[in-house]
Image (cartoon, rainbow, N blue to C red; front, side, top):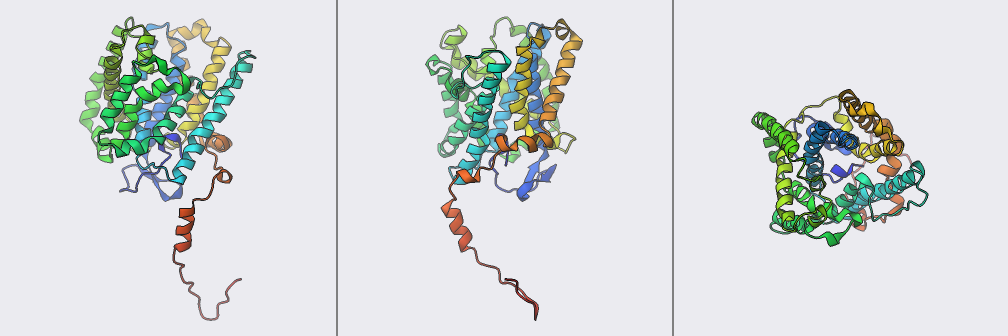
Length: 380
């Protein structure tokens, strides 16, 4: 079973640099596993920093990271969804790899808030995703509509129009985080249109060198715009009217932030190692880190852990950063995967009908004649 980021196998191609065998005989590209691991570390660190936004330097770093860490995840998710269609085996993977984990963890986080935060009246709803679980809702919608994006002639411009329309439609509401579904959609569609050669271009040394001044400029811009630009524009979770601006600023700002996010994502990918690293194998378990790390973040909220004065000092911020990175790393390891595979990547063969077409193809395969040596007995 695969993670939501690469749950649909792509057609076999020439073995890329840094690839390693995966279960089932497919090849895993070390570059993408490295990218997913580094992105999930940034997600966890960003969530930790989000509790300390009264510090100017922390908020600057937070804004820079939020410009590209989820766009990078979404772009890779789109890239590995290129072969998705509505065949039963793909729909089954969508259910077991996205829908089931969402239901399980949405329920778990709701119960955690009810009892861990002493809110006995807190209900369980599947329409209002908790915290970071919006990504699973979005991934389900994006994946299920993949055949549409693969059919129409100009998918990326259409997705940009939908993102703009979402930014001026507060009537959408919060159900299933549809604002984020629409406003982040262009990154998923862009991923569907990319090919291996595009990622080879990103890995060039010239791109890596050019990314350094881009990161510096991003940090300066984040610092300078802090008093004027609300974080909601980076979350892509609200319409322009909900952010206190005129409706026409929605499309302009969303397209501008998406453009900046694309540039920053390219710069991030340019620095992702292409060869196998000590953390490469953890890239296959990023969904575990993504789903589980928020329990630690929430526990800190419920116990007022982040109110400690020491955490608002430079060494405290550094310590929290290291802790967040180490914690999410441990949550991506194989022991955690083995322990929780039953709810994160369940097989659930009992819940699905057998694909009649696949069964017929199996029956039609010619049998290989047995070769026996003279006098050899045939076991019955």
